[in-house]
Image (cartoon, rainbow, N blue to C red; front, side, top):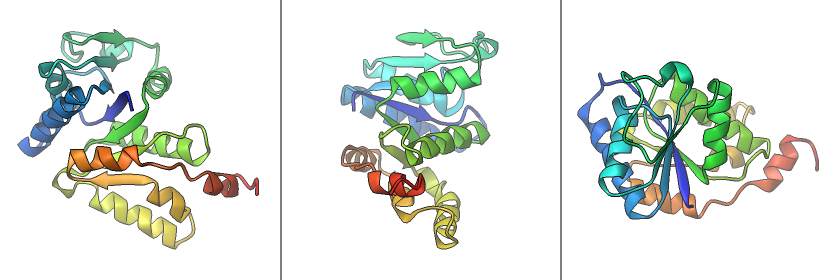
Length: 193
């Protein structure tokens, strides 16, 4: 993977462990020569992951919409800032630039980006790895909900198992590097075979 898109929260009112993890992830990506693609913000975990990557000499590309591209929200020290016209274009651009995706803790925006990415993999729109960096066990309730959806027949087990999850970013990247897209499950979901 030459580039990873990180979805994460922009709130500053969260536990310091989240900021530490985001900053460390940015450093790790830079040290591995992996370009960081993210939402372009300077607040919350977004700012921390970008600052971490930049502090280690990494390439960082922000993707932000015009209404958020202002001094209060936009990170001004990036390698490059792309400014698509709307949220749909923003997500499409982030997907286009990334070879894989990591969701760190975040709110509705992070959940939206994560689930769209998973859905696109489920339908075969991309074959890239998706990972959850499970800081402070943040994703435990969401993973439990996914497991219940599998039990109830709403999600194929192969699609659920294709989502990597770890609290250790090194182990998460290793798991993502070994990702194998569930082609047969995609065909079955689309009723192609």
